[in-house]
Length: 451
View 1 (cartoon, rainbow, N blue to C red):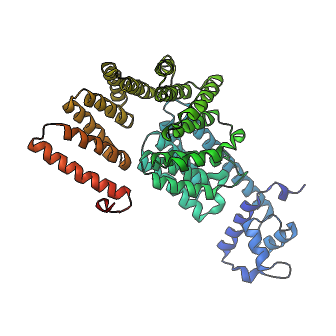
View 2 (spheres, rainbow, N blue to C red):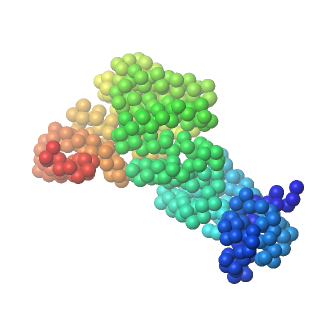
View 3 (cartoon, helix red, strand yellow):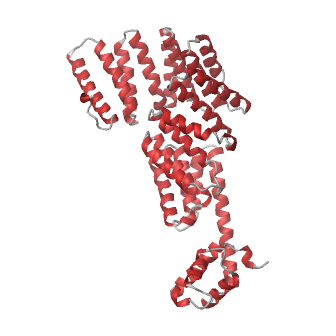
């Protein structure tokens, strides 16, 4: 077996092309019988079908020392494999180590890959993942976009579906910033860029699942469910049990929003069983909350309370304490829907406490709205308006236009029930104008007055 059998043809082609460039030769000046322009191009691009004899002839014309070339390329390969191993280690550390994201960033800085390094896109992809974990969305997008640009200029740097995976992470960044249409654009790009059997096979499933989440946020529930059902048929090919259980939870969530509660409960219960068998406590916690919501809508109050209390029994074992906000918020809603107003307020205040402690403003939106609903029921309109406004401030900051529209309706109703002082009248007028503006935006520019 010759030395050629051990060499990376692409690296050999780069080496030969670099030597030709240093010597200032044009391809046309090196052609001869058996060494056409196409053959030379194929050698420099690393096409594997080019014969060893043609490569040797071309190297002789360039006066390339073959032994020196073999040693140089083997050294490049060793260095490449070492850097690749370090990047794999960093990607694992950011998931499993304490303060992994910060450690990952430090290790990437120490590795210090230049923009001319073939592994630069991979490093920027991992940097983006670290920054997403640190909720530094702008910096994350900057790193991920650098990876995409580098691959665009050097398509052969797209190792193990890094391009498709990078688009997925970009989609996540936009999703967390509530820019769902932008996220959908990145998801489509990632889907188009995915190469089957080229590594990171999980990306082909992560992309459509993220699409489901975006469509749900845009209240395009039918499209979201259709997308999820399409992915469902590949369930046996997905090796991430957390993703599978999330799919059950999301399918139930969409069915709830489409008022198909009897269908939803079947998926929730199956998801709970899968979470139990695989000891996925956080996922089981979420599914029990969904079960409580469904049972309550079905008028099965006792079953609803059993479900919520089952979730709360796990509170010491969950890793994401923000889930407690969801549990106590849903418990408060169930109490409210069943006319236990004082108990509802008590549970929702517990949810606010956990949310404030965790500084989880996004989750607190629904808690403040539910608490305000309780106060409206008690005709304590000042307190109701205060909690509605607290939720509205966060919604505006997060650019959640659909939620802003729905909450503005509630605020207008609340103000209309109050004594119409001059201040209230002016505020009501302003909120009505704002509501019309929101409706106009959401209808794509259609004038509301003409509907």
